[in-house]
Image (cartoon, rainbow, N blue to C red):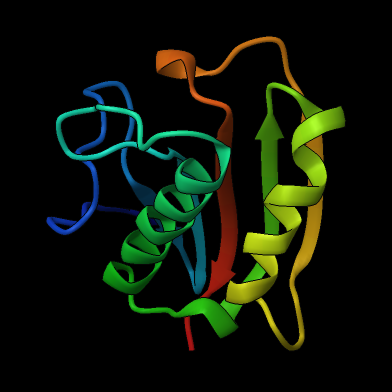
Amino acid sequence: MVKTCVTSSEAVPPLPFYSHATVSGKTVYVSGSIGCDKDFKLAGGLEEQTRAGIENMLKIVRSAGADVQNILKVNIYLTNLKEDFAPMNKIYATYFKENAPARTCVGVAVLPLGASFEIECICELP
């Protein structure tokens, strides 16, 4: 197996412990993105964090050579699943309008930097 690491100059920098994404064959495994800027400042509330997290993830996906239609599986983590599931879905649906990828959404106790939302995905290169 040959693994290639992907780094996107457009995305929030990864911490030194991981890559933005890794590619094996035609499969791209994208690390989690929270809704923050390049200075690691959170982007407001849930809605802003959701948009920023998805946009950051898509920058990484595109840097790897894929795009939104190539995303096969998404995992989402919310710190307040009961309250945030519906508003997050409203924003999520604006990015995945047709042929939405498989998805899991789970509630978690805490996320990095006190974020409310985190997203990761697996996609296939065209």
